[in-house]
Image (cartoon, rainbow over all chains, first blue to last red; front, side):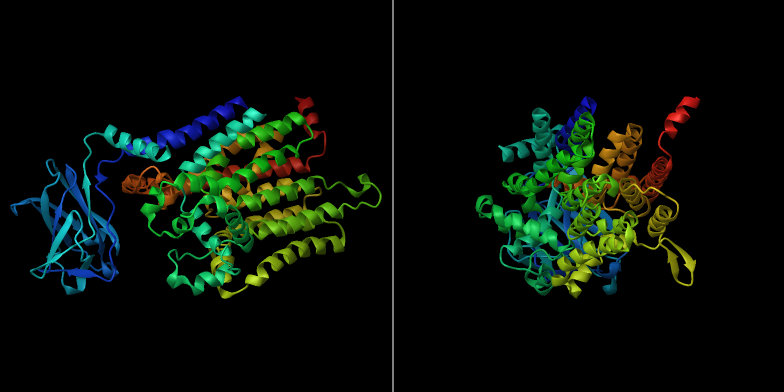
Length: 192
Length: 426
């Protein structure tokens, strides 16, 4: 019976102390924050030459992905969906291409690219387009009207508006250990 | 014993406070309406779906609503003002980031802890030998399976499990009439047991599957009729006030009926053979026509093994068999290792479902960053078909379960002393 007591104790401690650490090691990017809330009735259509552009501030270094919710009604879009990332001088610095057939209607979609090391507190803009899609293959992104700390303004149909897409920026951590430490320190600070 | 109990509780509190399955919030949100005087939760949820933040149906039976809702009413003075708004919060992130999450999880899982410990004490009563009883007590408290099943998954089935266990304790004490004092019939315990089965079904429907086997145990037409009618009348009395389209849709046509009675293979002309029902039916007719001395324990254990072998079970269901597996492991230690192996494999199957809440999401209290981690299903998909691996594991579980079942039935039928005689001949 002592064996079972040991086995159970090891199992529980492994479950609550080790597994979260092992999971943390597998994270190769971490989000800068939560996705802002949005009204699901406010949407912008993207197809052909209709593109959306968004200006934002990266709050962390090593910007490596941008995620937002995208509708793909009836999963009709099976064409390329391209995110181009521009720096402050409007120079194209990264491109990430996905295919519409790879995500479901309403999925939170991440566009991943090579990390931009010095991204902290820098202003960027990106465009999302699906140039080969026709009007029947429209995808839609959500938007909100009030700018936040880092989501500044968006451009659609050549007009600029305050606010923008409910995006989350993702950043490559300096090390795996840093992620593990952050997760445990956050947990213990809430526990104590 | 006190030390063992203290350590067992400490381990349970760790899992209870840190591991979060979203179901606990959903059914506690729904049960919170009892405090506000809502009696029929099924129609209430359907009628108010538009205005509610969480729009799920209440998939459990009425006694679950009253047990969970009643407990919430009792703790409402101590749990704090923010609790109801936490329950109603539909945001998946703020819920797990709440500074009160640990307190809420522990308090909400406290009834399970009480029932869990109660089961440990009840298990001791299944053994005449004090040492065996202590073994069962310790094995229930110290095995990874039940802690994981009860506290990680906030397993509400524990109510039905406890009542079923008490029913079997009564059946165990159901002595042949000749051995009872005059005037005290054996009918008493069997009927009490069947009443408890009916009550357990008021929480979760599965115990009624055992009624046909209880009928076989009953003697005489009157007792047989009563054994069927008592649990069914109790269940009817529990269910009748809620009988509505909403109840049928959300609770009655639930996972149990759809999963256990899922068609297996076609036999032509739109008819299918339901494999788990075929297996249960075979077991019943075996008990009726072949077995001369029915052991309720063996049949209940085999019936549950058949359900897990031939249906797409929910991980929480594994708790149904857990106390009986402990009894069997202590009474017949040769089964303990095969049961341990089969339980491990059975636990692995749901972990391979495409459902995040079976694995990664359980750790969201630590960090919502884990949302970025793919499920074991998604990882495995890159190398191998996860459904195939599920099928492989399930087939092994079924194979092992069938052999355990055969062995139990064989031993049940063997005349007393035959094992010794076989041993002598070696």
